[in-house]
Length: 362
Image (cartoon, rainbow, N blue to C red; front, side, top):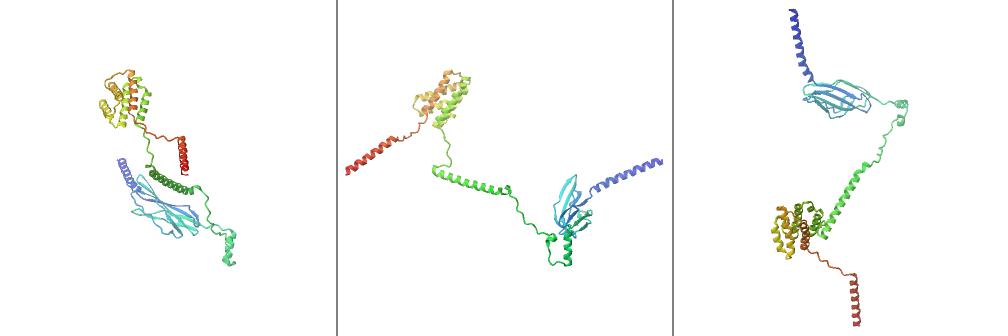
């Protein structure tokens, strides 16, 4: 019975311990901690060191670091307070805050703590130390300082003290990349001058020729039609059993030519409507008959599945050339210049007339 009772008490004690662990662990996890370090731990007078405060806290906390206007402790001056570096992982925020410090008194400094506020409590860091040392002086310098203290010399010889003036500013070596901005400025000026010159050229060209840019040369309608007929002739698709495709291309070439040459909307007209319009504008019967043969054969091939003879295909192509050449616009009349011989003979005749007039007047 006693053993059973002891067993129950042991189980109850273990349960209490586990409950305490579950309660204490979150509280410990929510506690803010801070670690202060200084690097380097030893400096010469006037050199600089960095105090780092590493704070680990829940991410919802707002940390307020102390602001030092001059000194952390007497003798340690604060040069700058650097921005904090923040890292958040698993709802835990890690902050690193740095103070840049220096000192001009040689001694061993002790900083007991650095306080900060986490929104609830004031937290204190650990203590740390910083050793500041003076530069080592040679025996001759120490001996000369002793003379100065005893008043054995009237003036101070800085060479014996081994104190030298600041060296003059050295001239930086020549680097091409430092002068690239000059090159970019020159290129910009050249581009601007070139653009202004080009604009002036365009304006003068507009006044002289009536346009800024030369208009593209448009070939006459009959030249383009003949070129397309030559391409179709070279393909010889009617010899491959593709008569329907051949007549479709052939009539498209002629319809386009009629539209460009006469202004007739042949692409939207039937064959009969096209022939009626051609009859109105031409008196040459062969023009009408050539076009009629082409359009009639084309309609039979495309809509009645007519199989033309090889001679009919050749005739349709030949009549197409005839139709274009018979209805083409006339070539411009070029005024022929007088030959060199005619000009010389005219000048000779004019001289003779002048000489005869002079003789008559005498």
